[in-house]
Image 1 (cartoon, rainbow over the protein chains, first blue to last red):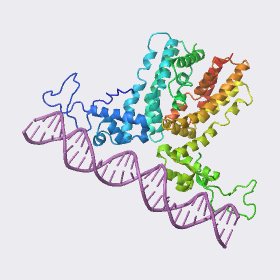
Image 2 (tube, chains in turn brown, orange, yellow, red):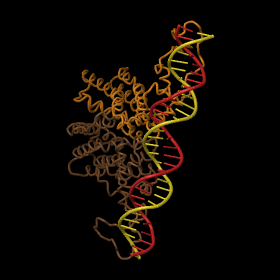
Image 3 (cartoon, each protein chain N blue to C red):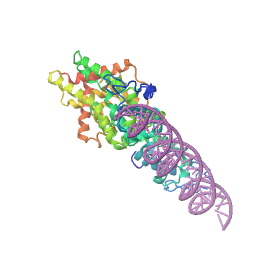
Image 4 (spheres, rainbow over the protein chains, first blue to last red):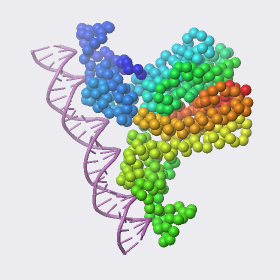
Length: 237
Length: 237
DNA sequence: ATCTAATCGAACTTATCGGTTCGATAAACC
DNA sequence: GGTTTATCGAACCGATAAGTTCGATTAGAT
């Protein structure tokens, strides 16, 4: 989510007529400057999305004004509506292109060096920290607030956010079982449990604005340590 | 909250004077009918709040229209604005008068008969079930969605909802420690943990609309059983 | 019965916003 | 140079909604 959201959308129009003699084929060129069909310039699209991100994140979906998004993106209203059907479409596109980024690379923590306990600890720290990030929370709040109006979006948001995490963790726990290290009847539930334990007393408070800043690392550490301890006590063979 | 919104407005003409004498002294009278200053009739106030609840719950804060609330409440717009400053004020008042109700009486589950394990199980079942109720979730979603705009409200919502639960549970766990049954370094954390564990894999999915209906009791039961088991394994002396 | 004031109800004001239109501009192509 | 066309920008439209006003109504108080 950070601010360099740039290369989000796939270069849809990539090979247009491509014309005769490679007029712009600059291989590592920073300014392609090819002529694009209306609404097909990926750079412009990204530019709009970036402005949209800023405004949506600041004011939420309902109160975000399209005009304001144009201003923030440095794009005219007419152009914006060439790239996106309407407000909802823009919002959906934004969420779809952004959400993946959040928890990307989390799985790596489970494949690194160290024994199971170490891995779980590292994973838990990343998870507990990341989930309480202001950007993540703002995104979650907005999506949750629009769940009633756009159920599909919220579902997909969940599926590529929380769900990814859960799946990865479940796989890991199953592997531990296969290795004879753990004994878990319901690995899915166990994954849920670990996730919840790693944010126990942290995430929900943040979500409701009870804590206005993320907990300090030391606190997160304590929570995660306890979480790991509980998991081991319960599931270690 | 429920859907039988019908009899919202008191049958205006119904039980009017009904008598010459004793105009307002009715001891168990259902229609006091005292003359109130403008904006001070509690019945009318409640009537407005009821309509507001219906509309806010149906459409969320931003999209709820004051005119619609008037219609739902059977009250004129002018009158509504005598009772409440503006939309935000009305919403805050609604949340403040409603939120207590949700988790009321939960503590009782911890004082009933049975051993500690039984109590925890009963408590967990109530908690896991209640939190995934459509009404609770709708309220939570709306408040979460307005957290950025009305931080105080969300905080207070949390304080008298989740917080009450946490406090009660923490007290209970401390008592268990005092009785020598448990050994817990950080009872606060332990309370958080148990709460999260009781809704592991249930609440968040519901919150993001991934599950459109509450889990069946049998599933909740499994989750809670595991939660209790973990707590006992970890903290029982 | 009469007075009083809370409420009704419906129009009104003001403002915002989503979305459209269209002539002007400028840059890529030939 | 001349043509094409994506974009600009600024006005514009229609709808919606928050909040106000004010005369009409009606029920409680005397």
